Image (tube, rainbow, N blue to C red):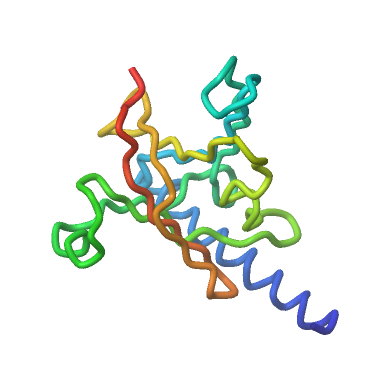
Length: 156
């Protein structure tokens, strides 16, 4: 892509990020925070030893949370997804001055034996609930979306 094309892409992404922040920043309509957690274990196998978490919040412009939508019964049935499944996004891809990389969003820094999970905190889960990645969309130049399913346990 040419330098002009890259600059234009960055401008569109920066604009999208600022617009996506408005519902949360100005109207309080984004009550859920979402973070990607890469959990590394000190032992030789996943779950052995002490856990060390690297937590990366998923945010839009100004640190505002992304849109979180609980899927309807119909949408879950069509996808064969469990109750509590959420869609997170649109999330703005990385650009000059903000956004998030695909690797960061999907736990690309994880190594063999690491766990990647997502923590939702908000009205339904004041102390947080751990989710796993069930699907993702990165097919648009201006947005990412994640489909997350609840893990068996909810943090106390």
